[in-house]
Length: 470
Image 1: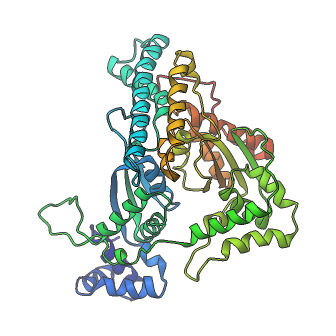
Image 2: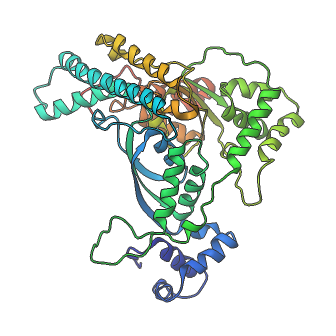
Image 3: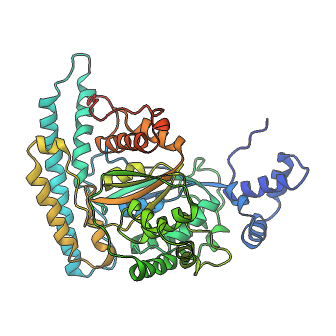
């Protein structure tokens, strides 16, 4: 067993790639890399010849600080990704201010910032009054130290107050990813509809060509982080063009939507890959439930089903990967849930996720604890004021005022093992009540659709509580 100490990501990728291509030991491969140019190797074998697995061998650690929640969602929207973001369940965001989206004129900036200040005022008020309400409802047990009790009460109050946090709130995201994933991430973000996200991606690309900002050994002169990568991160235009083509096709060919009420979690068991992919592609560019689309597409002939895939592939070049909507699993959970809950569920990587466009049209979640504390009027006023302000802002700028309470539609496709894992993990008493409810509903839906498998899921019902446990 030979361990390898920290190396620059591109050097490590070169050493391990050469190790697989020669009879030399790893020590000899590292010695070789010390005297040879890794950038020429990567440019030839990774970027020119397409040996993409080489870029999985070099990993980078970086942190995105002071970015909005919208940017954080875009950053984290990679399946092969490892990282952590600041938690809205444990940290006080009342003094963090907020990110103002670029491109607003002075009048629009004032509208946005006034709405942001009102939401933070509501956040502070709701948290303070929830602490009082929870302290009265849940007296400290003799066995619990006062400091631990106060932390638990404050955290449970944040669980409610976070519903008026909004997507313009700044956060931090730390990540460790391979060079290949970082390349995809930057290229995808450079094509984002949000100017801030494009700017963040540009900065990330520049940083790859620089030495690390934080050095473990300050006395050692570090090499640039990933200089070759920085040259090959042009915006990825294909997904955006494919979505535009699909949206146009859907507008011209789909019948009027049913607009029937939808439960928070609806499970569809998929069995026909052509139908499943076509329905998922249309889900991504409409505001319709997945089950409605799946039933609609199932009734079409094979030629019309295949037409949807052809539209999605029309703009694809030889180097473009298939869209994520072509990936899936037998269980499709369509979730109409609040954005805060989605931020928690978004962390699950062992599934395939499709997000519909952010919108105000699905309304807001109202936590029961807030109603019991008599804060419903404060809450509703803050959300309505934010919605009114957003209607005066252009394009995606209004999305920055979307509170965590706003509902959206999110599709999670997975196998049974992942469904069992999420249901069991997220339904536990330590979790936030919103995703506990989702995890329980996933188990209930599995009982309905596949009872022989549903019985294997040991989920905790949301009515089983231990509010002073974290």
